[in-house]
Length: 451
Image (cartoon, rainbow, N blue to C red):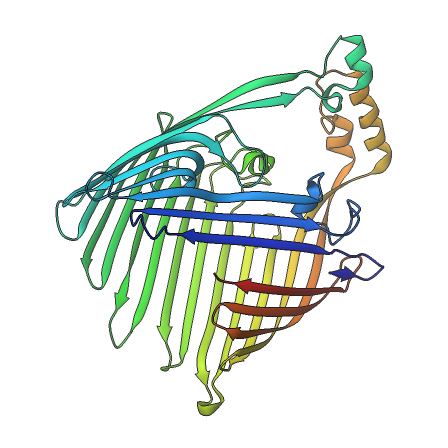
C-alpha cells in the first residue's frame, strides 16, 4: 500500500487454521488457529494515512493464538469436553479463556460449565479467573428456556506516569511512577426464552442482570410473511437500563477509550424480498435514543437499501450488487455510502469490478495553540490535573469546525483455483479523497492452501 507523497506500507499477514482427527482415536479432535502480522518496512509516522492498529505495537512481528484446544466427544454420555484456548460462545458473556469447557446434552435439557484464566486476542494474556455455567430446558418441542451465570475478575496495573502529575509536581509532592493495582469484578445472570410460534414467526427474549442491576433487555422477532408479500423480516428492540462503566472485556484497553456507555433504547428492522428469481431487495432501519447524550453516546438513525442479483442476463451469468447507506448522528455528524460491484465466476476463475463513494460529515473541536501551551505548562506543576480542565481553555479558546470529507474507491479483484485445495487471489484498489497524502493505492495478494 502506498500514498501520494511517498508513504508506503508493506505487511505480510498469515492465518493458519487446522483440524486434526487422530485415526485411532475417534473421540479426539485437535483444533487450532494462529495469526501473524509482519511489518516489512520501517515504522510509519504517527500522522501517516497508512497507519493502522497494528502499527501501535512496538514489535514488527505480531503472533496471536486465536484458539488451540483438544475436543473430546462423549466422555460422559452425549457430551463435549474442550481443553485449551477457546472462545466461549454460550452464556451471559462472550469470553476467550485458557481452560476447560464441558457440556452434556440430555433428551429434554442441556447443561454446561467452564472455567479458566482469561485470554485476549488483542493484547497480553491474563491470569485472572473467568468461570460460568448454564442450563437450558425444552419443556415443549418449539420452546427453549435458558439460565446462564458468569463471573470474572481482572487485575489491572495503572501506571502513575508523569503525564498526569507533571515532572515538576512529581518532585515537589514526592510522587512516584509505581504501578497501582486495580481489580474489576463482573457477575452476570442471564435468562433467555426462545419460542417458535410457527413457520412464519419465531420470538426471542433475554434479560441480563449485571451486578445487581438490570443491564439489558433484548426482544426480537424473525420470520416470513407468505405471498403476496413474500417478506423475510427481523425486528429487534434492545434496552440498556444502566450506565456501563469499567467492566471486564477481552478487548482490554481499546474499548475503554470511549468512556462511560450510557443507557439507551435501540430499534432495528430488516426486510428482504425477492423481486425475481435472481434478484433480492433488502431494506434496513435502525434508531438509537441515548438517555444521557454526550460525544461518545449519540442519538442516531441508520437507513440502508440494497439490491443483489445472481446469474443475471441469461447466459452471461453476471453477479451484481448495489447498496446505499446513511447514518445521521446527533450533533451534525453523519455519513453517506453508495457501493456497487459486478462480477462473474468461471470454472476456475473469478473476476469482479467495484466502486464505492463515502461522504463523512464531522464536527471537530479545535483549540488555539497559545492557550493550549499555557495549559500544558500548568499540568507540569499541578499534581493530578489533566490537560484541558482549564477554564480559559474550556470557555474561551475552543470552537467547533464542521468538516466534509469525500472518499471514492475503485477496485478490481480476481481469483484463481487451480485445484480444490489451492486458491490464489489478488485485489487492486485506488482511493481518492479530501484528506492529506491522497490518493492511496492498495495491492493485496493472498494464497490459501487447505490440507
